[in-house]
Length: 122
Image (cartoon, rainbow, N blue to C red):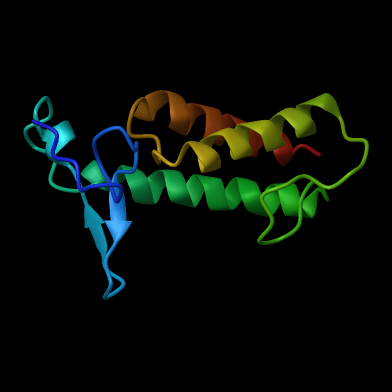
């Protein structure tokens, strides 16, 4: 049974963890564990690290192409090739989704890997 922690995480908040008063991330994986018995954290099989690394690499390419600036989640004004604009949208989708690819790992990794490869052609 998915255990909610008030408005901090779980339940209908869609927040999978909260930051405690000490600054530690407190995960709420009970909802996942009902179906995925081996899940003990949100970096299951290193997925979170893999996706974060891909997002960082794509971020670097988008900064290089002038689509965005470091530390900024928004695109800069300008005219860009359609593929480059789509690359930004792919990055933004998975950054803002905040799931680190957990709901469809092969798809997320493929989209990010292919997007990085395409951005490197510009």
